[in-house]
Length: 307
Image 1 (cartoon, helix red, strand yellow):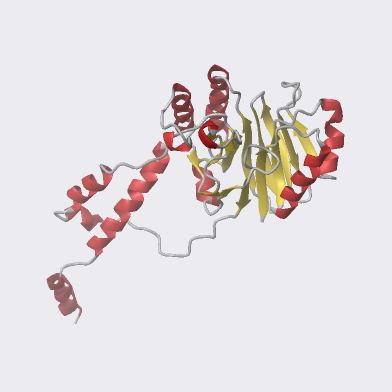
Image 2 (image 1 turned 180 degrees about the vertical axis):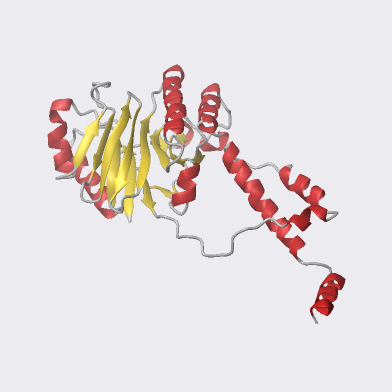
């Protein structure tokens, strides 16, 4: 089982943080990690990454961000990561696991400014087209919430949140099932001055849920940072061995057919367009299967003929 993680560590120059990050990686069986807001200069990067995860391979976005906002490191014994697009706010790439399974991973660290994040939203849309046919997971610190419930003291939906949600729908992404902390960032104050938000998250595309739908994100205690680290333990779905769904033509002749289909299709569901369609079809399937029981008189007639 291979683990993927990301953590806004608020700087890695302090040697006391190295032990904490090293312990986090080892205790959660992490093979690929995105360390955000490293604040490490490029000439110190090799020494610091070696101190945290010796013999790992790494890349960063120092060529577009002098502050080294994102550092991605991986254990070559378990996988290989190849960056395909690097920007100030994200490193997008594909990882080939030891069993030759290929997934796409985007490590994100959104800028604080709403207008500056628009280029990130454009990247996600473009990557969605590139990675459409294979599992893709996007995780990191987006520096904006999606829903009013993700702010401990304010339910207002801002224009920045609307931009984010539009980008998520356009990229056909959906939040992974999760456990752990709801609010992933806080200002670490108590009382009236306390602020808590969900700024960090993990999302997947349709192929991710189809292939790795059993994987979930866990949001850990923040520890050395004011942000919760995220881990994902990747579990490939076991092949379905049950009976596949088959549409039966005689269902459409049932007087209830159109009413049932209309009723199920009018139900509201939350998610990207593909997720909504999937949920509607799943709900409709259960209703249609109830049509499989034929009237007793028909069954009796068929049995009589067989005799």
